[in-house]
Amino acid sequence: MNSPAASAPTPSFLERNDFLIRRLHSLSGLVPVGAYMCVHLITNASLLGGASVFQNNVFTIHSLPFLPLIEWVFIFSPIIFHAVVGIWIAKSGRSNLQNYRLTGNRRYTWQRMTGYIAIIFIFTHVFHLHGWFHSDWWLKSVAEPMGMAQFRPYNAASSLANAMNSLGVVWPIFYAIGVLACTFHLANGIWTAGITWGVWLTPKSQNRASIACALFGVLIGMAGLSSLVAVKTTDAKAAEVIENEMYKSRIDAHTITPDDHKRSGTHESVEVKPVPVQ
Figure (cartoon, rainbow, N blue to C red):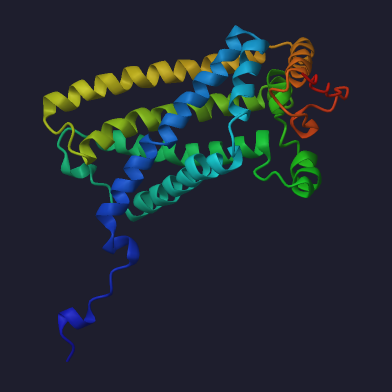
């Protein structure tokens, strides 16, 4: 006869490392995923200052060395990890929030629902604007024929406006829902992370943290929605003229290198002026 210990199923890798995985999941949601989301929304909101302001910010981002490596190490990989582990936690019903008296089931339910919406939104958003992969074959044969991979960094405002207006009100509504879902998920996630990490455990501290997180969520949500308003009110043709002039001036100043892959298809080629020999 087998003993109870012998017949017990072997715990899975996730179950054996439950504590560590939860902490990494919580941390990844704050840094770098949450931090990047804030920077991303604020950068997009800079379009309220005009196409030139937004384009300068995009130029700065794309001047970073090893940008694809930075994106995969600090953005895409943490997002994928956070999404996969988040689904596991939600599906397995392994929420630790039930241990805290002041945490309602409704709040946990909304956290889980906005998490699912955020996953769909983020992966669709990346496909819509960037096409997921930078391979020419993939972009030309798959993404672009489907109306995806529409963003061009060196024609940032105009290509973003054209992409957002390509299906009437469909994309703006989709982005508004996605941004609000991500905003709630981050703001409420900060509050639950404070519980997970033992920062606020008393009823009084949890109430104060809840108010602070709500205010933070409102501010970030306003930044996200204002960027959508800025995109919808952008004159794509006028913005493209400004962007092409900025591109030419930066090429002449040798602060960026020519790259037609990062430009819209309606531009003229720009010659690079040689640097004068001193």
